[in-house]
Image 1 (cartoon, rainbow, N blue to C red):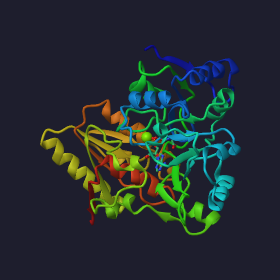
Image 2 (image 1 turned 180 degrees about the vertical axis):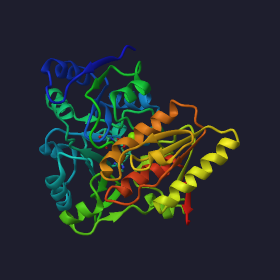
Image 3 (image 1 turned 90 degrees about the horizontal axis):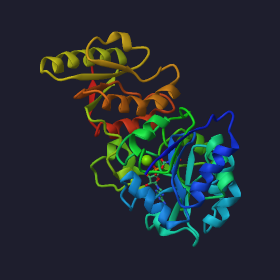
Amino acid sequence: METKIQVICPKQIEKESLIKAAKILKNGGLVAFPTETVYGLGGDGLNPEAAEKIYNAKGRPSDNPLIIHIGEKKELDILTKEIPEMGRKLVEAFWPGPLTLIFYKSEIVPYSTTGGLETIAIRMPNHPIALGLLKESGVKIAAPSANTSGKPSPTKASHVIEDLAGKIDMIIDGGEVEIGLESTIVDVTGDNPVILRPGFITKEMLEQVVGLVEIDKAILEKNQGSGFIPKAPGMKYKHYAPKGDLTIYQGKLEHVVKRINQEAIRYEKEGKKVGIIATEETKNKYHIGIIKDIGTREEEETIARGLYNVLREFDQTNVEVILTESFESGYLGQAIMNRLLKAAGYQVIEVKD
Ligand code: TXA
Ligand code: MG
C-alpha cells in the first residue's frame, strides 16, 4: 500500500488537507496524526473493520483495547452507558487534554474496539490537527499510539514513517509533539478514580479536582513480579525496549555519573559498544561511547519529550549496552520512570557512593 505523507502546519491548517484525511477515515481507512501527547494511528472506532486494520498495522494483540478520541465533550453521552460525577468533574477540569477516562460503554461501541471489554477508554485531545480532523470527519477516532507494537511511541512523523509506511493510507506530519508521553489513564467505573497509566496529568492534579485518587497496584515498581495484573491490558506487555541492554543508575547524581563512567570503561574493555543517556547538565562529564542528551533537568518537560526519541536514536546505532541516569524527582518523575523502567526491563542499580 502506498502511504501518503501529508505535511500540515498546526498553526496554519489547510482545510483541503484535512478534508482528504477525513475522507480516508470516513471510508474505513487509517490516518496517523499528531496529538499533544504522541502520534496516534486513527481509524473509525465504530467500524469493526477499521479497528481490525489498526491491530494488523501495529501488530498489536487484539485483547489490548483502543482509545476513542472525540472532538466535543457532548459526544461522551452516546459512547457511554453512564457518566459518574467524578468523571464529569475530570472532563470539565482537563479536557481537551492529556487525560483518558475509562467508562462503561454504550451499545454502539463494538467489542472489536474495546478488546472485548464492557468498558471504553475516551479522550479529547488538545491539538489543532487532531481536533480539526475529528470535526471535519465526524468520526469517533480510535487511535492507539502510531508505533509498531512494543516499540517506543512516536513523537515525530519520522518515527511513524519508520514503523508504518506502506501499511496505512496516510501519515500527517504536524511536527514534533509537545508532551512526548502517552496520556494519563484514569478509570472512573469504580468507587474511587484509579490511575491505570501515569502521565502528564499527575495524581496531585487529579486529587485537586476529585479528592482521593488511587493508583493501580500492578503498575508500581515495587510490585513488579508479585502477581498483580494491570487493569489497562496494554500495561502488561513489554514496551519501549531498545535493542541495546538498558540499565538505570539511581542515586545522588554525582555518584551516578561517576559509576556510569566506570561501567562504561568496563564494558568497552569487554569489547562492547556503549551508549549513555545524559542530560544537558551532565553530557560533558561522560567520555566514552555514544552520549545522548535527553533534555535538561531544569525543565523536566524536555526529558519527557526527549525520552522516546533517544531510545529510537539508539536503535539506529549499534550500541549493545545503554546506561542511563534516573529521572524520578519532579512532578513528571512517575510518568517518565514508568516508561524508562519498562524499557529497562526493571534493571536498576542503586548507587550508594
Ligand atoms: O496519549 C495517548 O493516550 C495516545 C494518543 C494517540 O491519544 N494513545 C495511546 O493509545 O497511548 P495506546 O493504544 O497506545 O494505549 C492505550 C492504553 C492501553 O494500555 C490499553 O490497554 C488501555 O489504554 N485501555 C484502552 N481501553 C481500556 C479499557 N477499556 N480499560 C482499561 N484500559 C484500557
Ligand atoms: Mg501505545
